[in-house]
Length: 335
Image 1: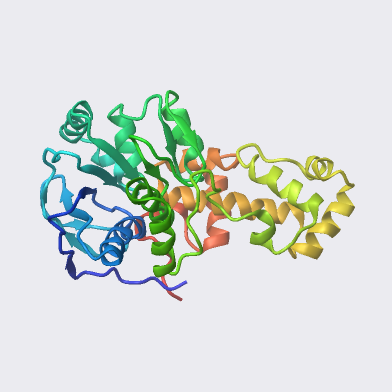
Image 2: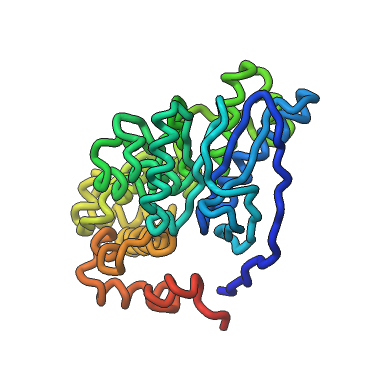
């Protein structure tokens, strides 16, 4: 696997200071660039399609200084976090390091904005900041499917959903390209459904997803098969990664014998059930390592490994480096 050097150049995104509706994007260090760009572009394209500055935006950081995003690019902020203007929407854009950035000062600023009636939303792990501020209690919150269980456990008074996004006074999106769909729905609230459909065409998007859409592709599409028994057992596997099943339990879930189940897996996914199950657990562990700040032991437990040493051994066999090194470096060294 080849590692890539981060992009070091600083980028200045020109603010749109005027507009009938205004958005302020609070960029936290390490924020997910894809989610941010996906949210910003619909506003720009809407202005072009309407032929007027219907939407304005500005970029903020907690201190007003430049912010480095997930791909290493540095974005220059227009200023520090400050009181929102009348009718302005604040969107908190986070990433992997959001837990370290939930300062008392920032949380206090967000609470004051909420008291003032500001619509405050979040992209990616920006939702963690809103949760820490107590702004999502009693609200639905769309959290990335890999992090949803841990988020729900940490914030039991928040209704965590694995749907594509949520709307209302606390719009949230789990990250990635689905942020564009959330923004298109916010635009629809201002201009009706026809404009977002047109914007989706201009951005070469295949329609506008609904809030209730799934975050992930179907198992059938992911693995290129439609065998109902296999779909059932794959879904069962994905739901039991923390407490792995035995070969007999997997076969029982499929409604077949162990030998029949092995033949089914060999035919469609080219490996045995237990090998495929192990891959699912390691893939989830890798994602948790790279996208959360859970300890190595916590990752091991969440993915059904007997101990952190057992997990480290299996992880190294799969990825070529131990988990701690992967978390620090981000990728194994090129061969």
